[in-house]
Length: 427
Ligand code: GCO
Image (cartoon, rainbow, N blue to C red; front, top):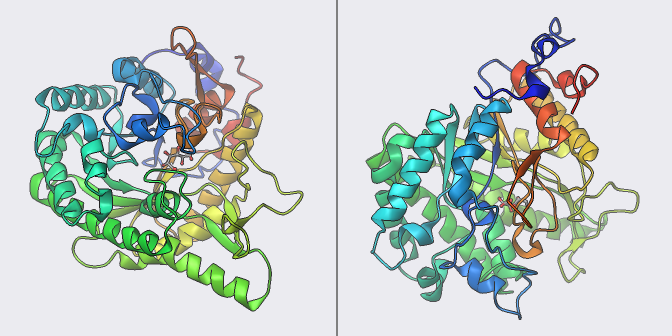
């Protein structure tokens, strides 16, 4: 393992809390998540690239070179392992693998074989997402998820990649946040295809649930030892006001954003586990043009304007546990320039997970969003979600922040109190 002076000083191996009980089991998975379009750079053949370059859309800037992970994945994985991660979540870029309908790039598949081999060699258990927001341009131009053959086309891609790479994918995340694809792309209009149509919003959500099941079938057929799961964002939704119609509207939103997916995970193709992604509490407001009210005055909010509410993670883990599936937290994090605030956020959210564990919820890992500051979709590179800064202006140098070392100590010991044991460390 690469030595990191901040972590490998002799006192670091015997943290002050060594005698305290662990908060997390010794086989718990610890890591960070990324997505191809947010880190690779140069993904010019997908719907997001087109959206970023269309001045009429909500996108602020081009994803450009990303953080050039397309070329720097090896050193990134070695760094994450040195930071005591034992797992890593990343995604495959469909538009590279299938640049034209039915035409699969052997070079792109070979690239991802090198990436996933390097991941395993670095000692990181792979959570590999098949679809994380970006669609090949040809797929979106044919109607995206609303095209009559969308599911069978996606299933064909899933079969090819799992047949080619499944031996290197211990965990497969089928579709990232189907609810957010539907909500942001078809109702709120700030992701492609920039629609604001309540009927299509509802329809796409159902298509994506079916597409998940098709992906599970593909994984079972082509890579039977891989374990597949849907990864859903589960915000804690509350009515903005106590009147009956706001309550009813909140229930209707919850039905579409949460219940549709959790209650839809039935039958043989539901997958082997479920990924819970949690960031915030949201107040539903039928009279707001965005359908959500601003957080109440005095609420702590992030660079994204999101309300910090750690107990919501515990509550949504309980809700997700009703599926009976083992759970992994596959995303949770904060956009902030203030890294101390990130450490606070990690502490409060890990405490919520530890409490859910004590309450009997089967949670097997925590994957933070994100490893590196990266491209935050329509918001561009402004929001800082990473534990590791990247110098995009010069040489793409990676610089771990204090939170990266704090997280490393918890990952090594399984004790939340080790986040704060900074007295014996210098940065
Ligand atoms: C999502 C995606 C990530 C985001 C992250 C912060 O949740 O929207 O999975 O790609 O970058 O969640 O918004």
